[in-house]
Image 1 (cartoon, rainbow, N blue to C red):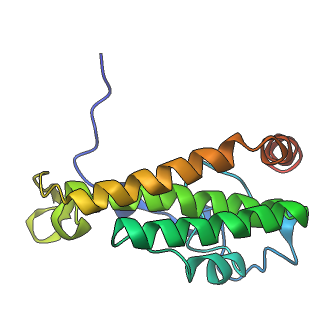
Image 2: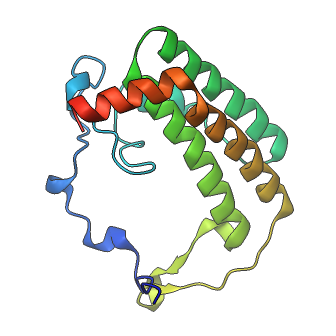
Amino acid sequence: MKPQKPSKPSYLNFKKDDYAWKPDVDYRKNPEKYRVGKGEQGVLICEPYKSEIGKYWRFKTEEVAKESSEQIFDLFKTYLEEKDFVGADMSRKYLQMGFTRARRYFNYKGGKKYDEENDYKQLERGTCDPEKAKAAEVFFKKWKEAEADENYSAMKKDWKNKFG
């Protein structure tokens, strides 16, 4: 039997104090405090990486997504060369988030999945903006390319064993 999807977004029960990533930590100076986590967790919090990578993160069109994903992938490679796992992992998370957000905008008008004014009822899918689907595909390929990088995979495994 399939588990039921929550009827309300999980962020409504968010407990900031329990969250592993903190906005007041400099993760370059304190990399040991960084946790890999699941998916995109921490991506919009971990500085200075959020500021370094986030300024390139765009997915409005396929062309914009190509430029954005290439810039972020270049940062990913630079962080790997510098043996900066946190930067590489954050870059990978931005590539993943490019995919998931573009898909969200493809599936839901304006990217909104829940109706705040109607007890967070999930909105109907179906705007199907083909440009967002193309942007999502661009990010998906770069995300998977980053995850397949052998150096990154080894660093990630070591990091998770050491820090979590």
